[in-house]
Amino acid sequence: MNTIDSLILRTIVDTAHDHFFVVDADGKVRYVSPSAAAVYGLSCEELRASTVQRLEADGVLNPSISMEVMRTGLPAQLAQRTGTGRRVIAQAHPVFDDGKLVAVVSRSMDLTDLQLLQQEYALLQKRFSDHLKRSQSLESEEKTLEEELDELEVKSSLMREVALLLRRVAPTDATVMMLGESGVGKTAFARQLHRWSSRRDGPFVDVNCAAIPESLFEAEMFGYRSGAFSGAAPGGRVGLIEQAAGGTLFLDEIGELPLGVQTKLLKAIQDGRISRLGDNQSRRVDFRLVVATNQDLSRRVEEGAFRLDLYYRINVIPITLPPLRERREDIPGLVERQLQRLNRRYGKEKLLARSSWQSLMSQDWPGNVRELENWLERAWLASDDVIDAKESASPGLVAGKPQDAKPVEDHAAPAMSSPLREGDGLKDALYHTEHGILAELCMTLSSTYAIAERLGISQPSVVRKLKQHGLSITR
Image 1 (tube, rainbow, N blue to C red):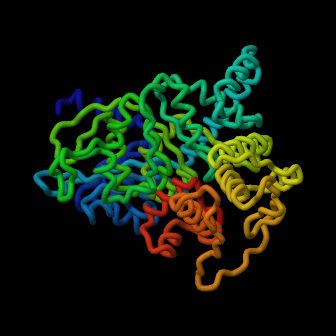
Image 2: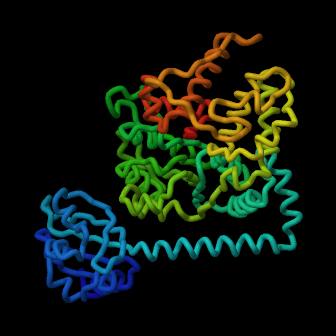
Image 3: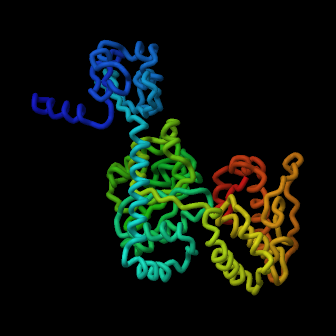
């Protein structure tokens, strides 16, 4: 590298927002960027005169990520607490020469900066929302919105603001991250975003990240050629990312991805290219990325369970969907829509008793829209011509209020009353029975792993079945 190149590289590192360390294979600090002094509490000269072993022992690096890389020879990411009391996220990568570790390069970001960025974005989002309210064209825009949201119930002001923001960003290819509790409707709004986008004629590929085992993730997401591994399907398989070409790739529950899988996904997102397993050639895939999670990803980053660079890559336009208890105006529309669906599905015209509305409107619905819809289906199946919330309340709910749950001895199976209904075949009866069992377990057990153990099936099978039945864990 010539002198000019060295000067350019030094300028890039010295002016970067991140704080850089370069450490020899024995732990001697070779270089630190000037910004590191303020974070770690020592001058650059003092840091360069020391070793990472000594800095860790003195509490300056707690812990040292360079020592972790020196121990394993692998890239690492972890949360540190510095001698100045700051919390930072550090990433480090090994440098090899002819297979021998010669140095470790690490960079860190102060989480204080991350929090400030989040607050700044929240402020910008609020200003944008205020601008929408003041806009002279808002009335006509809301009228158009009403016509386009035929599959979604959006009556509350909170959800209308969310819908308007989605409609504004839909024509772009910016990555959208849907945030909110389980069951608030993230998938439904992701589909609506796709319908509003210029990619509406392309595919919408819905991927539940929690349902794909880590060992199968690469084959499922990237595809494979024939003979790529033992048991590979003849002719190979097109991966989920490639299936989304020209359309939208929706990654639900992205916070559940293991770190190793996150690395592979990040590379695919950054490069826009994928390689099928067993294929030496890469191919470009053009897709719009939308992700969703009910977890606090910034906290997952702090805990070292989610990659900081992937977090930045997907957190371009974060949109939070409020829980149902904060937008009760939407409940009547959601109930009427679900009742119409059930009447069409089962070929009967049932009505909801007027006395039921007080119970439905006062319930907090911790499972949100999904819990409301599931409750209504159970009530529909258990009622005659008129659905009464008091008579049809599920165990643990009386008049829409949570009651103390009775202990379940030895995890006994829920009592099921499932006679063959008129007009139902065996397939329908099995579906209703499975739905009832899963619904009860969702109320009594705390995770898909616990349900899998109770039923004697795999956890991915539980996730898949819950999705088929539109259920979620509400405990």
